[in-house]
Length: 136
Image (spheres, one colour):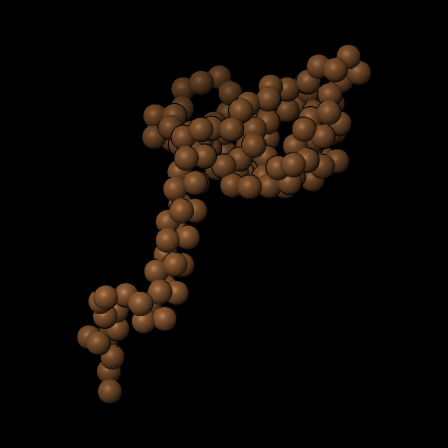
């Protein structure tokens, strides 16, 4: 039921009242990113919540991933900068809420690993054997 003037593009449409970003439409290689940036087709770049990934949003609203180590992100920006030092796109900061979710998930994974190792070593005061699932 899109009523806009542009053709409807589900790859550039967010959901949940704008809280959920559009899906990733594809993956850019470095040279594709630089070519699109020089052509003015990149709207913004942002470090993704997962490590070593950058989200590139094109002028049409589509999102693409660009695999770049977090430590090389500043160098990527410098390589994409214009001769006068300006960027032909907007550089967005890491979304703090999503970064907190990522950190919490990492801590939960670490805790799960510690509990699993403690269970293997017999250090837990309860029995984790799934007796009801065993069929003899």
